[in-house]
Length: 434
Ligand code: URA
Image (cartoon, rainbow, N blue to C red; front, side, top):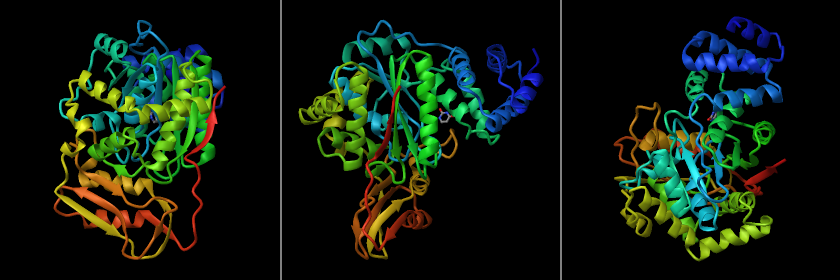
């Protein structure tokens, strides 16, 4: 078999065989197929697409390119959640402890942030002492003991995706549904959970710009999970404004703690209740949406979710007193108000602009080598639908930088204010399952 023939066949719209797809994945992972051929293959796939069978094979081959975690020694149904990446997305930090408090097993491998989106691991590291590199044996032991662990992916998980994703990033081939779906699902399937809930975001600041493209990606991933015998479901959620009020590492952890104390922002609580209810159904704990909402609401009201977050932090070496007393988190030297110069109603808050501004204030990294300032970020004071007067504060910029005038300007521009009242859509636009 020759790689050039496989590239030409994909270029010409021919359906590839199982053997051809596996030849590519294995050869590329071992370094036998060079980057230039892999990049040409990715571009041909971007233009020609793949059918369901090809995508399932690509996912399976990528999943088996490295370690596949065996979680069978954890008792109970293991549920996982994956978000396609958003701004202010601290969902795992509140949702994980809540569903674990209700009895589901959460064995989660998370990632770091890059560019305008944050990563759960970085947020967790704003808690002093928190360890995210945990070996497989300790990971399993922790989930068996307390019902939850959130750790970094092991280096040997889906090496094919590590290489291919880095290549796609610099060859204009990220935006291909078969490639995104196989990339995400290979990692989720290799990390071993029985059930997966995908939170596919759409809008400015999300991979998928439109509701339709987000639905297409979600349906493709649900199909892959189903064909590989995992209960996979998806929700399509709105990223036309940041999630909740806080953007930036320590600020977001504090917001997750507030939420577990019953004081979360409305849209974030809505997302957590919906995702939580679905995961509890996947775990066989809730019988329907209403039952799931009730269980999540109880775990907030009786603080069992908060206790579970404390247990998680303690088990991974973190200082749990930060969860009880969040005022200990470092606070940026400069906290600057951004005020509105017009009156009206907030119509949209450009998540991409807010995410990039937070990154430039110190909260994120432009390249993987950059260091993060845990205290930096943005706190929104207004959300879509809110009424605004001239001179009212729209947001607060938190930074240790000395000069930040451009970021303040960008944050102000991220707010679109309309003279007319704005109807606020629910955060979850669709729920997709087989
Ligand atoms: N996230 C991933 O893990 N892979 C993609 O291809 C896109 C988003």
